[in-house]
Image 1 (cartoon, rainbow, N blue to C red):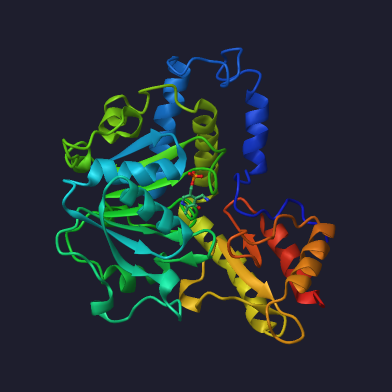
Image 2: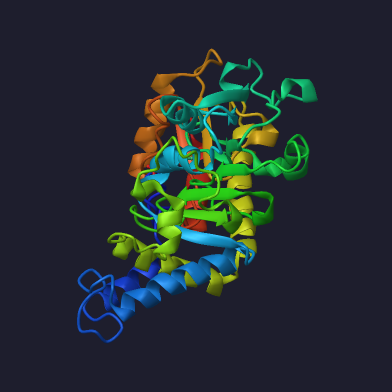
Length: 377
Ligand code: PMP
């Protein structure tokens, strides 16, 4: 069987076909303007409506409470690594807590340090031998008076996801802390209780739309109230500036907002996050099932309870039972012939990675499963 659509690695989002068809149709005549959304002014009433609708649809999908705001920003999740620090630090002498579980949390930490942050690492999974979350409370090294606690819900490169433990994980957090989470690579893939967070952010280019738009969902009482007067916040990174301008402080990434809105509408019609979560569970269980069944050929380095539903990473084993680049090359070559593309792991960790983002159809996953079941090194 040929894969009907590419099984892609982390990168620009795969978009639902019906969304692309709508965009194609509307490209020549958007909302009866006779122009495309790429050409109309972001100050036009037609784009204002897209901006408003996109915020509302996302609010509906994520069940965002009224005391939270949705901000449309730019600069990707990477810019947010600076923004969260600058907007939420309270004052520079106070510590900020970082949970490090992979490359992206490490980068967020580095950025806060670069800005002069008094950064405390709660624990670092990269340094732990067994790659398991610490069990004892004493090994969760929270500082007493941190301005916020940061973590990444899905480490895209390492294939580590934290929400699974929702209660077990959350019970470790000190109460009444501002929890900040980067949800770039699993947003809208599973239920999330927004109330637990002070601030959630994500780039849209994994599970939603084309790169360009970065979304921040933030408790309104945190906007503009926790900046240190001695640490100026550049306007483009400032939550208050963005909020006051209804996310139109400067020219927004109009096409990305427009297309993201089409994806939101599409997901609502399909049945929202619960529909998507069920599908993602089926897709990921299928692949993990094969990895675990074929232990002589495949090996997943991630502990079962931390396994990501979005980014499944594994190694192919040689006849000596050790990870083998040669066998992996054979695996990739065979996959390419079936049009299963971009299965190479991130260059930092190597191995294989299947990124099963929301829009990857079940047919592609079935094709990958069939290939993995029959793969003979
Ligand atoms: N955080 C996570 C979890 C990511 O997966 C990525 C991108 N792969 C980033 C942050 C960086 O995002 P951006 O490219 O939008 O800056």
